Image (cartoon, rainbow over all chains, first blue to last red):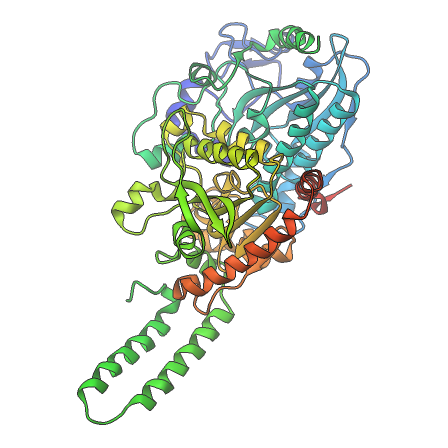
Length: 283
Length: 320
């Protein structure tokens, strides 16, 4: 169980059935929400949205990019950046070992993948968090790659789209990780001044320092259905206020109701909807 | 156990108690024990020096949240003249955990913004233990924007365990409030000097901490998560907070050596609370001289410098 899952109270976990598994492997799998048995190929065709109950399964950064961008003219940015353990952080495990384990498990160097490409022919820059890489946590490499994404947007006046899925700042990088919140926000401020659109797509889950910086700063803040989005983890809140949390607390629908996001978009409609919005903003 | 002293300071507390006792004896008795008191006083200073010369990270964390440590208003009272507190975010409420207002530093008008903790139980509750809600951050932003309009430098004091984790805070957009402050502060067209005076806890601290010059008092701390929070997540037990504090290296001294903090202001022997007056003087001097320096810059130079300062964070830590 990852540290982030531990933050979730059991109630929320069972309610939505979001287990530790993201995309199931193998031929047949079970929807974590409605338990329907699903055929792998069909699920993939459906962009990992359950055909029975429309539950949006968690997907990897590469799967996201694959679904979202046009097939041609993709170019990855900042792939050469690798995390280092400058201050020799060690908890129950060494940070260095956690990095290697995450790299092995995900095939990624760190928790953010950035690509330039096209969305229905419109040139865009896309940044995607890899949640399976240490809970999508933001450290120096994630921050720097995000800034490179913004810089590419600035240079070519291409819209920026970020898909967040993160537990927050990476504790193992201590204060450096906190400063990434300011760093990424500073870069976005530059983009904002130029009038290049930035769309933040909040996916399950987007919490802590990522939610309290780049993910809430979109010209449009868009969420996938039923994603967990917030600053403090539900368990921390429950311990602080000593009461059970309301039904659907910190889910996309809750955020929409409270005015924090512009809209909730089904994953299968994202390409169309975002392209349409961007083409109006870029008019 | 003397509650005015932390656990690791108890030997000092015992010595001080003995001195106090002797003082009373000397009033009653007919022989002069002034010499003995002076000797013990010297010993107490020596002992304090020795205890404070080798503080662990965890001990510094405890000092940073010492119940008697001076809070924002204690410094404001000591070196800001004509202070006028300004209230409210204009849309929801006035947050008592985050205060702000106009005042003068060495005669120069400034906008001061700071977290505020409470001293006794009632006051602690009133101040919500120094944990702001979104309205607090929105008030801070409102005041910063006002400062920008009237070309007043912004001075912030950071002293919070973190932003408040509550239902209402989430409903009103705690994340957005913090993010918005970061976004706007990176581009605020007036000098900003931030000082961590006690506890610099996470995003709740950073939300008034984006700046041109970052100062930390010697026994303050600044970290991405509290030692207890870090310990309960990574060690699965809050009891491991001392280890977590150590691993995160959250003291002014360590962060300064990592070039994450620009300046450390020394505290009096035994910590800021042993001599708030002296601490205030040192802090005021640091703020004044940096304000002089920053106000020489044009707005463009200032903003470019701030941007470069922020972008640099973490660039040393990655390979490739």
